[in-house]
Length: 255
Ligand SMILES: [Zn+2]
Image (tube, rainbow, N blue to C red):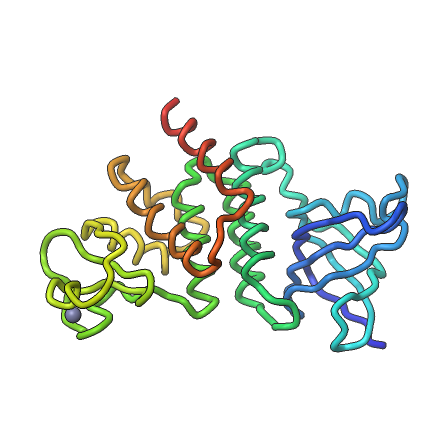
């Protein structure tokens, strides 16, 4: 048996029995981890409150190294991100981030950079009011950290630089194409040079200042089409939380 101590973000909590829960964490040092929390459903239990999804906690758990279900020993709250919970639009954006992590990241891989991405994105979500750049940033950075950075610099087949006008993109090749190569591959979408430049910025802007990118209204949909569809083509399915946050985003934009 080993005892693990790490900072962690709570991803999800499901009931296991009348008194116990299974909690999924994104830990700083051990990647994605699942733990049984004995007695966590009983009110007044010391775990209660620290185990709400999105909270940043100090976590202590134990178990054998290669098992996939550990035992929670102790949790202390560091940051609850209460501002996110108090705002419906922020809350569903946060739920979408957790949903993406849960769907895309496997257990047992140490993913320190993914912990940092999620932590910094939740901290930004807690602060920012313009959420669209942050949503798109989270999608593209998570894909990039998972090894799926789209090729936006040059044609993915012949390496020539993009020509003027709309740029063809192939999801299967995960990159842009020149006009000549676009006759040889399936084109899924074409986007403007402006959209390409925004997506490039999303890949390296500081997360805490990404709100300053301010997408122009005309390009917001185009940028979303590219980044969210990259997620879909990678996962092969839509996420449960997505249709809701898309509706919320449209309502916010039209108000
Ligand atoms: Zn080409």
